[in-house]
Length: 178
Image (cartoon, rainbow, N blue to C red; front, top):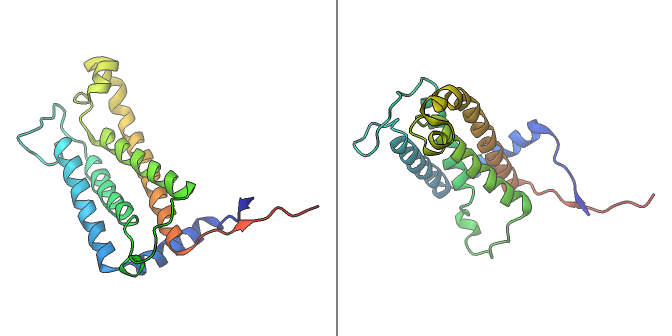
C-alpha cells in the first residue's frame, strides 16, 4: 500500500504557508527561541560572534554570516514544528511517521553541515587530522560553500516537509486490480 503523492513544490509551499499562518503564539515563540539558541551555539563556537572562549585562525568570509543566520532561522522553525499547538495538547501524541523521522534527520544533517561550512577550516579538528593544515586550507576551505548550500537545502526541505505535514497528510492508496 503506497501513499498518494502531494503534487509539486508549489503545493508544498502553499501548504507550508497555510501551516505557518495557523501557528499559535506558543509555536512562534518556540521558533524565535530556537533560532536564537541555535544562532548563539553556532555563532559562538565558530567565532562568528567574537568571544574569549574560542579562537579562529582564518577570518570568516562574507557568506558565513547569511548562512549562519539562515541556518538559525530554519532550525528555529524546524524545532517549532515539533511543538503541538495548545488545541492539540489534550490529544494523544501520534507516533512519528517515516517522513517525520526523515525530516528530523535531514534537519540535523543540515545543522551539522552548516556548522562545518561556517567554521574556520583549520580549526576543524576532523579536517585538520585528515588533511593537515595546508590540506584544510587547500581542499576543505573551497568545499565549505558547497557544504553551506547542502545545509540550506537539507534544512529547508525538512522544514517544508514538517510544515506541509501539519495541514495535509497523504492518504494511503490501495493498489488497483488490473
